[in-house]
Image (cartoon, rainbow, N blue to C red):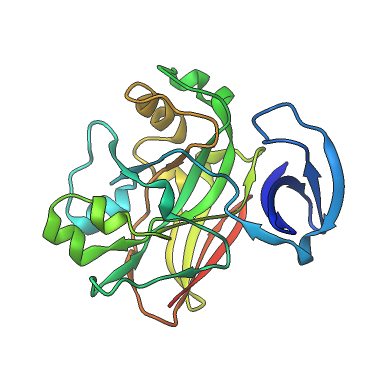
Length: 249
């Protein structure tokens, strides 16, 4: 099942998408809902598929990325937060802030929570997850180096494109993930290269903070990070989920 949020008139509505149609539903996908009217997928304006209270991100979670950054593999997940205002829509522009001189793409698999989670064991994590979507952890790389921590570099408005939908059926353990910059593949990996798999990540994070329905966890980026310039188009593709495309302006 693919869960979407679309602009229906002036209202943001949740729905279920197939290849041609979006069936609007009466409530959030985390609640009891009923099917309502159908709209054409090609005519629908896709929004970010959820509205999280928080975005938890995992750093240095692919062996290839750890190697290219010169980091040792962590013993526990390295986490940080993006604000909810960083959420961006599929197809929307990524604004290049004037305070940075290097803006990087980071294609990632995103976990979307479906149930409240607190102190969840890895074997129980799947029952608390709604599904998975594509994400781009946009990063002002020069500011990250200057600050020595990641809040400013990762937290600008629009620095977390999500979409195009949440796939509720995909198995996250060994998916092909790639990022394309202006049509050229720049990141190419499998999620099985993660140091901490998605279920271990959910367990770890839920032991620190309560995860609420709709919250998003970015599971880290593989090797191949690099800069984007105004006018560039960046696309994150994940096997079994779909494609997230944004333009830098």
